[in-house]
Image (cartoon, rainbow, N blue to C red; front, top):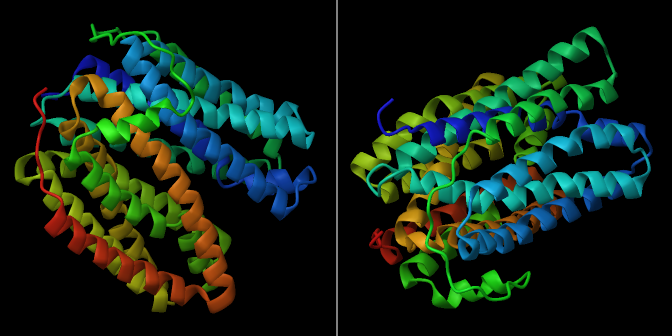
Amino acid sequence: MKHISKSVWILSLISLFTDTASEMLYPILPIYLKSIGFTVVLIGVLEGVAEATAGLSKGYFGKRSDTSGKRVPFVQLGYAFSAISKPMMAVFIYPLWIFFARTIDRLGKGIRTGARDALLSDEATPQTKAKVFGFHRSMDTLGAVLGPALALLYLYYYPEDYKTLFFIAFVPGLLAIIASFYLKEKKQEIKIKKKTSFFSFLSYWKQSPSSYRKLVVGLLAFTLFNSSDVFLLLKAKEAGLDDTSVIGVYIFYNLVYALFAFPIGILADKIGLKKVFIFGLVLFAIVYFGMATNTNLYLFIGLFFLYGVYAAATEGVSKAWISNICDKKDTATAIGTYSAFQSICTMLASAMAGFVWYQFGASVIFILTAIATICIIIYLLFSVTYSQSNQ
């Protein structure tokens, strides 16, 4: 395919394998943890610590990638960490070791994210960024279809054999590690070497272009109201869908996302990243208004379809937009800094959503989120202009 280079293909296949492994375990992880003695509170603490580790490390390792002028070693190490964490979760059953294994997995994500997205950015021109990022998101999300489907198939024949799934998940993880050795390093501009502290990436916020700060403020405001997809699945469950139907709509959502991310990326390059991103937010608001009142199975399928198109129109496009605004030599830092703040905002969003749901009911949180999204759309329309830096 035109504009999809060998490196983009390799990175996309690596993400496909890794996401297959991760999503194979996503539906059964809470059940498995409960079976070895974890309480709901402990599971919440575990996920909070893991996501905080991933979030903060994205900024640090993005900065390290830019200052060293290297991308590939960060990508290789990051995916290797995520792969080896899978069997570790099955071997270690004590809470402290489970925390260690889960943190290793999320640390791997933190190490690779900025460098990987910078590699993708380097393989595109400003006019083809959304296409490249969209293709990568399509392949990555295909793993979120294959993973749960394989898990359901295995558990159909071997009910409650959760531990074996962790070892099976190591296989696609190992394929990702092998594929990463086919990546070639491009020459990067190396900055003057200076000590990089864990929070040194925060200084980029002051140095970054004002267009970057305005855009990221809007993106983070949205993230603060965009709680975990788990709440959508819980709402579907609360409305009367059985477990199989809930997992089914989750797989359906990811399939829609995977199918639409690449063509929407091509469209965004043609008509503008800002237009497509705002279109995605409009769909998001419609979905959340719909979720607040819906109890019909077929309408849920329609809402999850729109939710898949929303994800396809925003995930890759937002990173393409950021990479077009920032200086080429700061790409990993810019995306890493945004991703770090995004992870923290996601944690806060889920905590707030859980509290509002508990106090006032599910409908209130969905309506509030939809209204907040409309306000963010207005902000992006009038406060953020689309511009490109000289790369």
